[in-house]
Image (tube, rainbow, N blue to C red; front, side):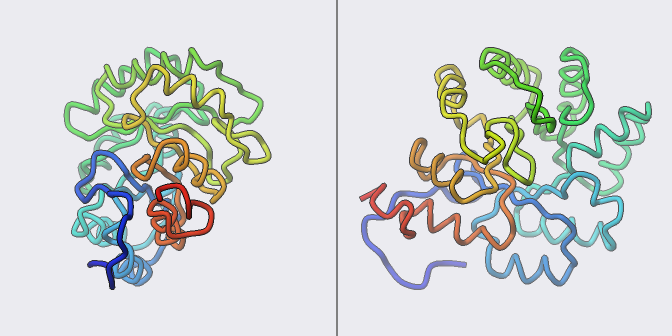
Length: 253
């Protein structure tokens, strides 16, 4: 899959398999046919697919769907809420078995709904990272819960030291919590304070709204890691990354 013609002086984008410049897509229950159609257009631009929250529990033909993503060289994993659902029910070993049964290589550990003690969250990362590529999510789904910047930094550093591959900053599908105000505006001071101590390429910024994607691309460049992207927003996001849309038209000239 390639471009259709040459445009000079575009910013250089990383190629798959990427370690930076990642695009993580939120799959909320696509059918097999929809996944096939989606990959026929977007395969080259998608690095990760999260089967949102607990949708994998209800999605038909789950193994076949996972296989389609894996064949496209995409890291597919179950939403972090599913991990929390099993942990709160004292069924962590059952969760691990599900990962094995469905041939998953990536797992998400989050505490967006469940208030796990920090050391317990890190213990799960240490355990699962022995056999899986671990993504962990920092931040609460509750907009009333505000973490000060130093706690974000502590949690991200500790997660990476425990064995996490990437750390996701919580925003929800709505883009109104975590690093964002209820209006969807980026908490710029918070982001910049975190990046003063953490390399941006260790972080995946959930940014479902175009205005949020534009802000991160302008601040951190074409190869910023962005997540919770809707399937039909992958190509539009890639044009933003390349300065081929009005919002970033002059950013890379």
